[in-house]
Length: 133
Image (tube, rainbow, N blue to C red; front, side):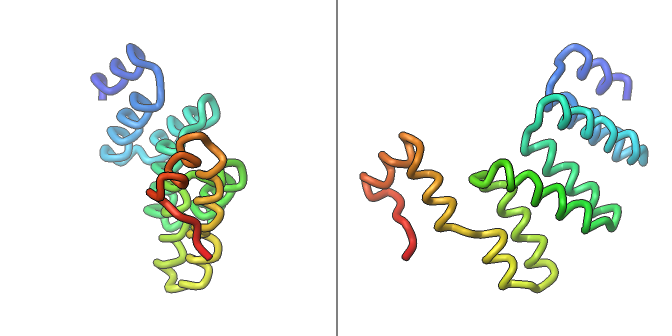
């Protein structure tokens, strides 16, 4: 534990926060692990921290909170494929395939988002990716 705290102090940021949180979680200090990640997410939001927080919520049998976190992130970051896939997996786990596809894996919207950045546009023109429909 002391090593993880020292690493976090010497290397502030999401990676150190994740390491400390995982150390706390594995030593059954779940509330402290969640607090570390909540602070990290508030200071500098990253999808990696969000995904770990949602994982902890699922482990705590709080699927509603986990789903809300993922949904809120996607409202602000609709092209975040990692979070979108995690969100879709929530519904797949509930065997709600229709919501998984409609709410989680809106590939048309993702590919349209890619087309708006330079790399995405270049990949579309090169035929590496194509839109659906």
